[in-house]
Length: 123
Image 1: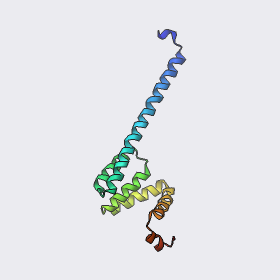
Image 2: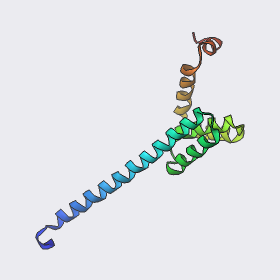
Image 3: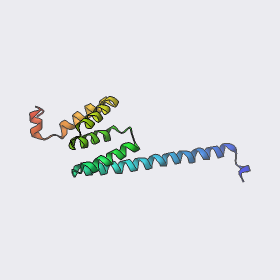
Image 4: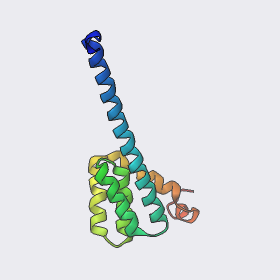
């Protein structure tokens, strides 16, 4: 039966199968990291900083380029009094993605309370 299929058709089918496999892998990886990230956020909001730290570290172990997770991990470490490690994480993120600093500052301004905005003379 293989004798009736041209070589180019077999190669095309293999390329499609390989492409779908790669797509499936990245979809799985995204789903896993998304669930772990959300778990970390929920734990941090519940003030379970150790649990949040564990979840964020797992996300980083799967996707080491995710700087947003590093920011959340830094915040969680800071909440636990691990200021030096948190500071180093923040510095690493700034070195890797200087625009993140600007976005973080803007987010902090918009998320602060009215009284904090008054202190900063933003209102």
